[in-house]
Length: 243
Image 1 (tube, rainbow, N blue to C red):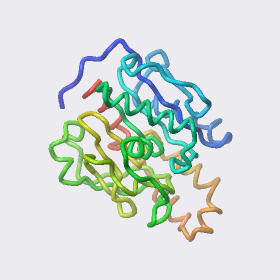
Image 2 (cartoon, one colour; image 1 turned 45 degrees about the vertical axis):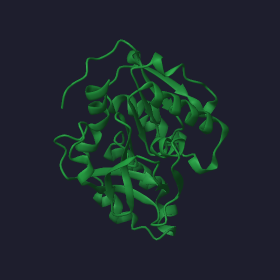
Image 3 (spheres, helix red, strand yellow; image 1 turned 180 degrees about the horizontal axis):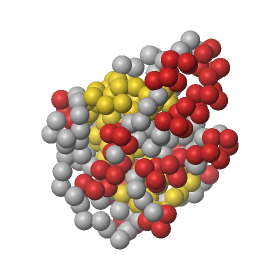
């Protein structure tokens, strides 16, 4: 993996939503969690709360863009989300390195012509196994990554249909599109590199009754939660490799 020379420009975090207030008070918002997972100081980022109507500057103003998860649904096509999708199209054309997580993953797919909706296989929650596909073998970002690794999941919707030309790099038992690449330096994951095991355990504790009503094995999911160091390193790898 060849490291990129860091730019003096900030990394943009497109903030698309937050956990509930209790989880946020314990673990921080989604933008803060992504910032920490990427190894970035607050002075090195510009957080733009697009879900609150804020707008980013031109793509040329940034070193890279990271797109957070959200409780919102891409399929609702809210105005702020559609405006952000248009910005992502401009950013791809400008060659900006990007990494989308969960909602960000789905929004990137939607922005470039893919289809997003509820996963027919059901909700995917907890620490699950991700399997790399042969397409990841020649990818610079994934060099040296093991063929299977654990990752934190927390989603009901998924990328149902890929954008034209997108490459699938990884899958899981419940999601065939766990990681995709668009162009040369735009990546996204349905799983959450930024979530630690304590956040997932706390989430399962708060929402366990809801998930049990969906016939999920909440005690089993909680017992299986563990650290996910390979997944957690992907945000740093993107910045080191492309930005």
